[in-house]
Image (tube, rainbow, N blue to C red):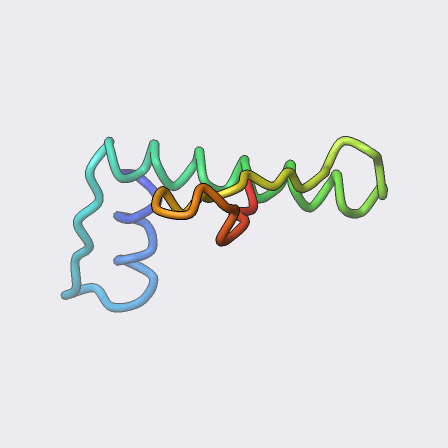
Length: 69
């Protein structure tokens, strides 16, 4: 929450910004996942792969689509 307060002061002394602890935690988690993905792609490691899950048509019992996981 301190960052929001500091940002508010810098932008306009009469403005304010609300940030909950839960929102801050979710933002940090998302940023960490994005950072890790960028690192894997940057290093071109074999750690990142796409897996496909078949989606079956229950009437025909045939694969109708594939879902990337």
